[in-house]
Length: 405
Ligand code: 13P
Ligand code: MG
Ligand code: MG
Image (cartoon, rainbow, N blue to C red):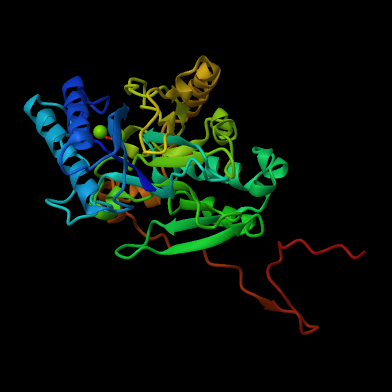
């Protein structure tokens, strides 16, 4: 049976600033998901509602395929209902990520982040008798936030020994990378790694512009292992509307990396653009699911939920909150210290986001006004070139002559 796992997330309002959605909003969506699983329309097989910071994630399994209007419409209606509650209770940023009035079918590009993979659920399958999945949700983060961890896991055996140990992983992967500066149609490139790993690196170096959107196995090219929501809100809205806050789905085990390999890069607390006003560079902190944003400069956060799916497409009754484990406490402290140190530099240079990102903030108006106050100082006249009697020229009497060797 073909099953689709869809994660759709949006920020539709939060308590006392960009912190977390209210319990009532979450409960309303949990009720909606429950009835979508049992209703006549059979919209969903199973569903789960979580939040990371102020973003609500709908985790859904169903039989309608990737980009299915029925499922996307359901998610949109859920977010509309939660936005209404947020608005009624005076919460901040009600409906923030719902950027169009009424999306036609697929809501990709309408504001919410979408990561989906369709696969065969067959307990008799040789390769995938079981289905293990990780869901990463990042808040206060740019959509290139997953470039570093995904490159590390799928291209670098220094981070993922499985690339050496498992012959199926050793065959490599195909990375689909999207050019997020391109508007209207999608501009993509497909690179087979490890052969093209340095080409992938050359693109992923710039997470403001390029992001991994999908990864497929080369051992089984039909099998998609990763899906990332890599869109930029300001490209849709034309102005700064909040951070893009991506989600990623990663299938694990068997022909794919193991979960313990996939989460290893998060030990670093890599620097990304995001956090306060989406305008700074800060290290990303792994946190438990359902964590509120409460820190200074609101550090970028990432949660990771591990679940299994049975042959019918139902989720395991329980899940594992990977970054909620005490193993990650040390990383959290390290990342906070790293952030404190880094923020001492204030706004100068690389501590703020690049000008490509800041182009959507108010600094543009200030710079445009200041531009008019600039004046030109005439260049100091250069010393005249005096012809030498030998035919060669010399620039100035004060120019030191090279000593003969
Ligand atoms: P969100 O995109 O998570 O709403 O954050 C916006 C922001 O600017 C926080 O300072
Ligand atoms: Mg918000
Ligand atoms: Mg957010």
